[in-house]
Length: 275
Image 1 (cartoon, one colour):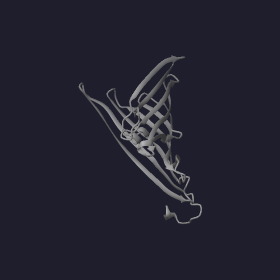
Image 2 (tube, one colour):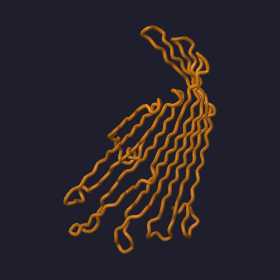
Image 3 (cartoon, helix red, strand yellow):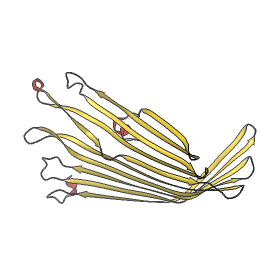
Image 4 (tube, one colour):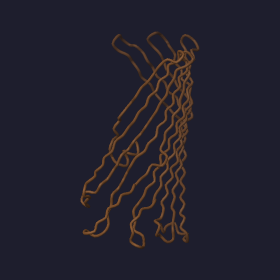
């Protein structure tokens, strides 16, 4: 899922994929550039309270690069993506005969990126055995700033940052795969190794500028999983001229850990339940 699907409830429009490839000194190199963009908006003149203007849009850009080196034995791939969006809200105040309208960003992106790096090496140990060590590392960050409108003590309209959200995720995998060619028509495949995944989620609620005393409430989540080890096995066989058999199984041993912490920080109160 992406932030736009969550916030607006629509699927993104995959606008563009550009592919490029060539041989550089007998080394195949490939590049992919992808772009997503979607949204909806409304603008009326004159503005009315019955149908307020809005502007929701989401954009994602991604670039990936891959190469095969060492006479086809080494595969390397890299990908980087970034997300941004607009969620503009229109409100109004004042009596019907003297109505005024205002706009502000209900949410703003705050450092939304993803990164992925992976590689594998094909080692032909014998005519039947091929060893394939592989590794991958991925990291993702999602963040949002939430704003809310309010009227100060003088009755003037404004808006303020009332909530912040941050998510960080990290994945790492290290494994060893094998291909065993039993015959021209039958091959077995195995893979074993370890997986690691961790994520942190930070939530922060803030008081509006007129609150007295000011307060700040934070929730922090941390979660991690370790798959040590995982094991996969598969079979690729030609049974008949018109029938191929492919099957496999996966088993894992894993452990997880989850922690939660909250901090309530009013200026002059020690009671967290007062929030």
